[in-house]
Amino acid sequence: MKILIKHCNLISVEPDRELYEKDIDILIENDIIKKIDKNINEDADKIIDAINKVVMPGLINTHAHIPMSIFKENLDGYSLQEWLTQKIWPAEEKLTDEDIYKASMMSFREMIRTGTTTIVDMYFMQNNIIKAAEETNVRLELTRTLMDSDGNGDKKLEELENLIKEFQGKEENITINVGAHALYTCSESYLPKTIELAKKYNLNFQIHFCENTQEVEDIKKDYNVKNPAEVLEKYLGSTNSILAHAVKLTDTDIEKMKKLNISISHCPISNLKLGCGIARISKLLDEGINVSLGTDGQGSGSSLDLFEVMKFTALLQKGINENPKLLPAYEIIKMATINGAKAIRKEQKIGSIKEGKKADIIIIDMENPVIMPINDIFSAIVYNVKGTDVDTSIINGKIVMENKKIKV
Ligand SMILES: [Zn+2]
Image (cartoon, rainbow, N blue to C red; front, top):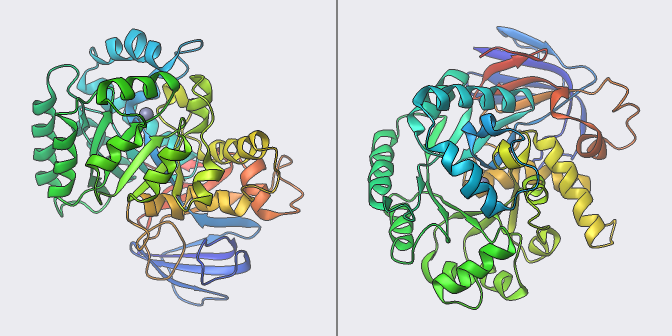
């Protein structure tokens, strides 16, 4: 299958290319970006005219809980701990296979509709999520959430290890990771077992970390440390890890975290909704820590639209630091694309548009009165484009949405 995209305006996020190029053609052959050039004259099974449209890499959401589409906007006025214990955990106990499958289909359609092509999930009953991912062709980084606060920690580890073995080298679009829920739901005897599992199979590790003040206080007490980062320092080693949120970090935490192999998944909308605070993203970037973007589940994060997350990220950092020079629009676009790919160790495969990389590409319709006129293309993407302006989405060389119609 050959797809030829004609006359596009390209934001490739590729360091070897111009930041923005006009009138470019892209040839996709099966799952791979074969050629990027002006005036490609080759036969193709499908030609997409992208004149006046912007082509960029599919967005990468590094923290979500896919089936939580069914909990959309079910909280207002809850703290993180109240929301989990009073609303979410009791409701989750009642979820059936069918619920998880249908809720996952809703979320995958939402992410495709809004320009995300890869998503990092942390949930349970994962066979239903996998079934929905296979049907929608999304690129999925999946785990079975690990925690032992309910007394069933070892059973969860066993379930996850079985899944890891089942999927080794099996599916291109689905990768299994190790995800521990949080330090307040994993005991100090259990946490090292979860990290050992990631090490054993050389997998990425993810965990919620320092989401609000209460969590920081709980970690200090449960783990008997002065700074939560001491726990990571003690157990993570060189494990490639994604820390979701990281809102409440001290300078000491950041100093310790710099030496580890970690990325932060910044989820500002969820953090604001739950009244957690605002993560110190510009400081983390200054210290050389990779920061990617996430939505969190829609219960707290509202939607899977990463364009919204890009806008919030930029505005919050400029505002709280009283410095408009921070986080230029192009840096924000990198956070939603190549930084996400780095977080999951797939930067050689996805996250930018480059010959030889996987064809995960979105095409944005810029011709609407909210976006026009375009004075600065990168600012237009971050501040004016909405996820629903994405016109066409291609994942692993397959068109999953065309002319805003989802095809899966
Ligand atoms: Zn989360």
